[in-house]
Image (cartoon, rainbow, N blue to C red; front, side, top):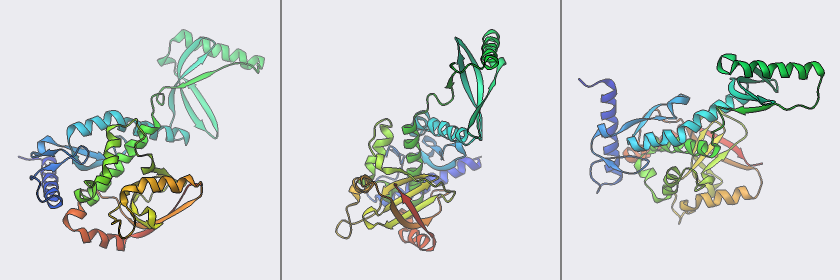
Length: 316
């Protein structure tokens, strides 16, 4: 008997197949993985994708192929988790393991940032007892003699392999999957989105840096926005905390601007070094696949009309 999880997978698969056929009427009846754009005819060939990663509280949102799902976890999702740990440490919300090095002795300790100071606590159970005893004896001598010239090195074990760029690309992937769940194949399969998928395939190269922007003020009001001002930057923007992710909107060049040059225009605006205020209409992030531009294109604009207005300052 199918489990609830299997029934959900079958439903999402069938909904995705129908959405894909509506978006591409001449294509075979397949579910197309939104990351690699490969087609699948069996729901068992697909996996639930947690958006954002489960390690930071995400839940299943769409189906992707196992290769894209597992490959991302290995190359991107781990940096998202480590980045969150790093932010929590900087805010004094958690401690972290470190290597403490002094006068030839190395031990394991934990560090906590509190009121602008780092509090260090030794972990003798995780260190060589002789090294642990020797290091603190030397530090006691330093304190008792009031020495002003001495050296203590800290190596942050958990954050050593953190790659901020890969973390940013990981969050771009999260934002892309939110837009896929909300808007569907008609939105993501346009040529303008090829640069985003290429960024996922080459996570260490700076292929689409303008798609990822930061703002100073964090927000719990995460969502998807239809940006309308300035008109030259008309786009779909996903806001996640202090990060904004820009995706080309449906724009006819004869009426406004060519959406394929969105990232060039963002770079041009930011190169001026001035504060840029962007405005748009906000809708909530999707909690399940909706594929609005495939099923009911007009419905998404009804949600937009009913949504709130966002106004965000970028740049200096």
